[in-house]
Amino acid sequence: MDKRDLVSVFDYEAAAREKLPKIAFDYYSSGANDEITLRDNHAAYERIRLKPRVLKDISQQDVRITLYGENISMPILVAPTAFHRMAHPEGEVAVARAAGKAGTIMILSTLANSSIEEVMAEATGPVWFQLYVYKDKEATKSLIQRAETAGCKAIALTVDAQIWGRRERDIKNRFRLPEGLSIKNLSSGSDQFPDGESGSGLASYVSWQFDPALSWKDVEWLCANTKLPVLLKGILHPEDARLSIDHGAAGVIVSNHGARQLDTVPATIDALTDIVEAVEDRIEVLIDGGIRRGTDVLKAIAMGAKAVGVGRPVIWGLAQDGEDGVKRILDILRNDFELAMRLCGCTSVKEISKDLIF
Image 1 (cartoon, helix red, strand yellow):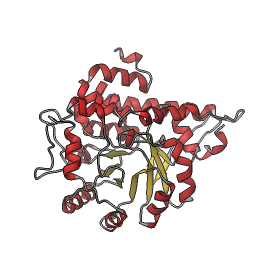
Image 2: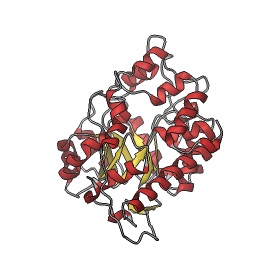
Image 3: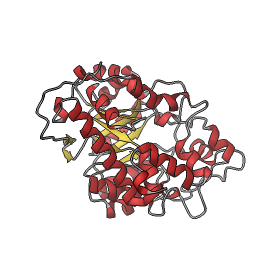
């Protein structure tokens, strides 16, 4: 496909479908069960209408925000996704470089094909570390300490994946990592998972390694074992948002794990308002899932999110053109967001309010 024809996130997705092996594309793109929530994550944004203001001076514009003391160029972050080297040989390292050039935050997955240290050696912008809690608490504690030592700026604890959702495309494909790739952040035998002969090898790995007893006491344990801000990723219920504050979290990420865990949960944008109201400005609220257009970013911020995370689109850019492809995806979303803001009469992120939602 001619690069000049790649003008939207959807164009990059179509190009990635053609370029990637089916087992890899299906891993990245699939959701749980019937994929109802997967389709709804973006469709929910399409149902929301905007109510723009006119005759405002939009000759100047500023889309910068400050998040946990970090000044970033836009309220669009790179959400954590696993196994980037299935899409491109430089994997997470290329994504970190692109995020730095875009002036924004990358959230690095525990299930990365590049180690924390490899990524941080190349990163030129802030990196957060996404954490899964393992049955081996010492291994988990080691990950936290390595993230701190390497210079990560926050911990995003995934709280909706003690067990794995049923991803039928992975089961049919007998998903496994290609030869030569591993989970580089784990060692002592934990960096490999079964070959998938009887189903998804990753699902078997999660059942083997992740702690199904994860509870609020573990959130307190994590907050006590790190100096970094802790955000809980995977919050959909307002009461869990309130409990997050009670147990020491500095923020929540409204997320349904890319619709890969429990099918028929709400689209994240539909869950956002109740969670924003529940936290009452006491902690930051972020959101991911289904972001494909600048209008999606604007709607999420208007409805109370501080920033949004983008996952799959980053993978599509990585598959197409490595670091340059990721940077192009971030530029597309930024430019689209800036245009949406101006057409709504906003010159700064602070001017985006719920009044713009029809």
